[in-house]
Image (cartoon, rainbow, N blue to C red):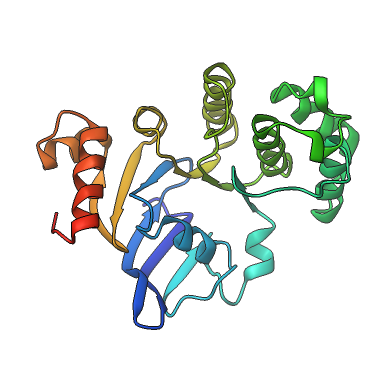
Length: 248
């Protein structure tokens, strides 16, 4: 039996009387791309923050590589990385300098080779010597992806990784991520509001609504369950129900 690289059990995060994440349980297999889907406020970002050890769960447990995150945080996070359109890097450094800093923090060896390799993979040659504060939003997205892939993680958490990219670069990034999964067995937890992208990338999808899991399966299984034409129609149905307090 394959041991999950990630196991979440009865995870809850409360802020006062509000449950941002309300008792969710799920797992991720080695080499799986697991989609985490839901409208704004569904609990996706809070879940990822708990998986990264940035906030402490109210109740429940998180095991990564079979280890409890709360007591093995440093060991686990050496093998995990994260990218989001909504994070930034030190603004006064160049792109290349930022990547060198990350490489040193993670104790990488042969840093020049690894940085050059990731710059080429993400087609960043034209702006790798540019000061970070002068980057466009799409270039900033690529540097955060480069930072995440640079360390050759075993698990990658991606929060809307292509949100500010033009269609051509976004397609190349998706192809790169699938190749990294194929070649290294990388496991990816993936969020996006692009339903076509979620269908393309995800082996399996977990759908959150108001902090709870309301559906889990392949994109087609979820579409069939809700009797909709496609995943976007399912998303719209659940998002509207969230706003009016309805039930799925």
